[in-house]
Length: 212
Image (cartoon, rainbow, N blue to C red; front, side):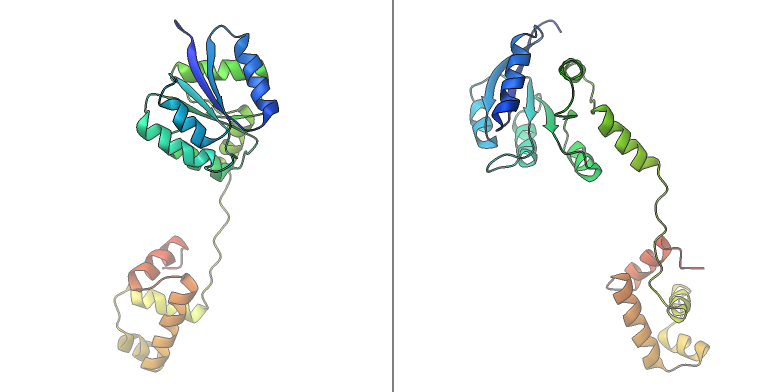
């Protein structure tokens, strides 16, 4: 990097603040411009403090780090946003990546690796802590659990006839049951599939592999 990257840290834990402050003080590629203990403080600092990269803790008093991210990206799109956290659950990581973060690093990342990852981010990369990356890869490549069929054999039969375009009367005649019985079955199908109408029920049934 030709010039020092200017950093704002948003972190309310003194021990983490001190760690990052010491780290950037002895690192020639970065300069710490502000240490903020809340998201609200960070937004105020941004009005007058130059920033190339913001390091954000997720658990903050008041507005959370996750709530802060879209606020910063909307008003300051050139700022790189890096989550620095202890949380490594896959759903949270993917959700934040969709919000446009530039990196997701865990707080137990060693200092040398942390600096290397931040340098990569400033050069346009979007790294994850190695353990986080492995977790996402494992979740993405694992076989999904087979969805359970909530319907009875008769309900599946009626649903398939519905998919063929048969009316309630046609289905009743075909299965030798009453028109009202068909309606009851259809109502239960909607309830079990958590749908509200024929189209939703058929789409859900296809997802479950229930249509022949």
